[in-house]
Length: 157
Image (cartoon, rainbow, N blue to C red):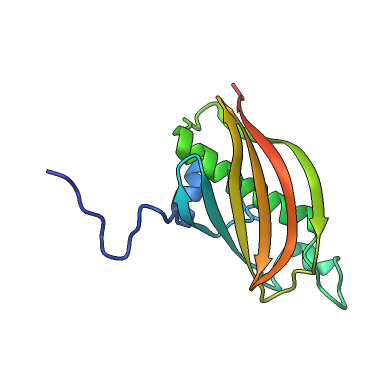
């Protein structure tokens, strides 16, 4: 007998409970709230709800809070790590997915408190435990940042 998913559950959506099981990041450095549109070894969309409570806004910048660009890139990388972990069914005991490179990074518009970042990540190439991605962070219909990046599974024990 096959188990049916509850009506509000989709095999293409990944909630925060599964995210924290798949990647080691924790507050204040966990930068993905949920994922949707998961397609194994192909693509995923991460969602980051940006709030004024983020610790980096205290110093970046107090009079005009802007999410640091490197953290937008990190949010893309974490979204890619979720895609890799689920696609490869990585046993997280003794293994971690590390961000290994970034290329062609561009920042197009500031990300501010109240924005919802859609982190579109697509696989460009996958070879074993190494994936190369194209990432685009969107706020509404505007590109906030974009880059290509790579990540790999690394034994940590």
